[in-house]
Image (cartoon, rainbow over all chains, first blue to last red; front, side):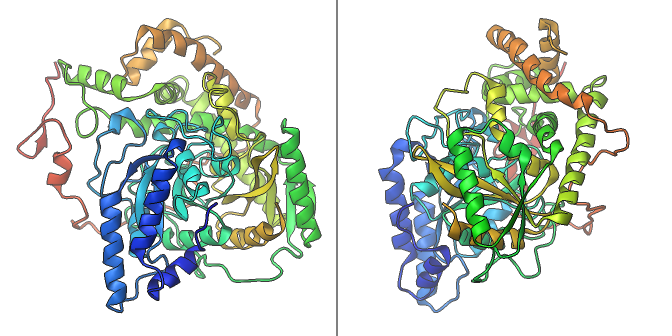
Length: 476
Length: 96
C-alpha cells in the first residue's frame, strides 16, 4: 500500500505548511489515473477536490487551524451522497443523479479538513460480496486481476490498497467493509450499530447498515471513526460517542492478559487450508504476545446468514420502494399511466440482484408468510444477541477468519446467488447483533490476502480498536 | 416452499412493482426457491422463550422540537431532480 504517511502525520504536515493539500490531492488524482485498469473508481471529483485543497492551503497560510484530517484525500463508496459530481450507488437507476445534500459522514470528514477526491465502485445498492453486481463494471483485486476484491465496498478497498488515497469510507450491512478488506489486504472497520450517522447514505437494510473506514492501519481507522462518529439529529438511530473518543494511545502491552475466544464454528466452517493456517498462526502470535486464548462455541452464529437473508431483503424491499420513477433517477418516458411508470422505471433501472432481493423481501413480509419468516428471523436474532452477550461476559474479544476463502475468481460465483451469499458467513453475525468488528491483515495464503476478524462487545469500539492496533503489530 | 410457480413469481413481481421479462421470470423461478430453502433452517430453531429484537440500539422515543429548520437542500433543489413538476409539486401520469 504505497507511500502515504499516516493520516495524523499528513494532517500535521499540512497544518505546519510542510505539505500542501494541493500536492496531496494531485498525488491522489495521479494514482487514480495510473491505476484505472483496476476499475475501482466510478467518478473522479477533480475540480471540487482541487478547489477544496486550494481553500485549505489558503487557510493554512492565513494561520487558521484546520482539523485532525487537514488536507487528507479520501475516496467514498458511491452510495454516500456528495456534492461535486454524481452519486450512483453503481446503479443504472441513479447513473445521472446529482445529490442535493451530503451525507453527515462526508460533512464531518470535510469539516475536519479531509478532501473527497473520487467515488468508488460497489455492488449496485451495496447488494453483493464481490463488486460484480455493479451495473457498470467489476473492480479487480489489487493482488490478482483475475480475482474479485470482495464486496460490496470493493472499489473503496481496492483504492486504499492501490494507494489512490490514504483512506476510504464504505458501508457494512452483512460484511461489506470487512470482507473486501480481508480479500484485498487492508484494515476494514465496522463500528457498533448506530455509532456513525447513516444520513445521506443510500439505505440498504436500515437495521444493520453501518458506516466505517478502510485504511492501511488500525490507527488510521480509529482516527476516521473519531471524526465521523456521534449523535446526529438527522439519524435518530445514532448513539453517543465514547467520552474518550477513538483516537488511540500509544501503548506497549495492549494484548497482555486480554481474554480472546476463538469461535469454533468459524474455524470448522470449510476453511481453505491456507486460510486456516494463516489464522492459526495469527492466533499463536497473539498468544505469544500475552493474550489468553481459548476456544469458544457459539452455535447460533451459523444461523446469522439465514436471519440476515430474511431481514435484509425485507428492509431492502422497503428502502428501494422510493425509486419509483417520479422524484429522482431513472424514469421510463414511454410509460402511459402511473402504474406503468412505476413498473417500467424500476424494471429498467434495477439489476438482477436488486430485483431478487426486492422480491424475496416482498415475499417474507407478505401476509401469510410474515410470521414464519420475518418475525421468526427477528426472534432468532435475539438468540444470537444473547449468545454474544454471554460470550462477552467471559471474553474481551472473539476472533476467527473474516472469510472461509481467499478472494475467488471473477465469475466463479456470479451465477449462483446462494454461493455468493455464503461469502458473508463469518461477517454477518456481527451485523445482526450490532457488535463492532474489524478485519486486519494476517499472513497471506498462496500470495493472496487473508483477514483476521476480531469482534468486540457492543459499544466497546475504543477497546476493540486499541486491541486491534496491538494485534496488528504482532501478526502477519 | 421449495417451488415457486410462475404465478407466484408474477405475484411477487406485481407486489414489488417490477415488470419482469420472460427470461427473468424463468430465472427467478429457479433462483428464489433456492434462497428461500436455505433460510428454512430457522424453522427448526427453538425460539419459544424469546421475543423479537427489532432494533439494536435500545433507544426509545427519540424526539426533536417541532420546528422548521433550514437544511442543505431547499425544496427547489429537490423538485428539480424530478422529470415532471408543476407549481412546486410532483406531477404524475394519470392513475386510472
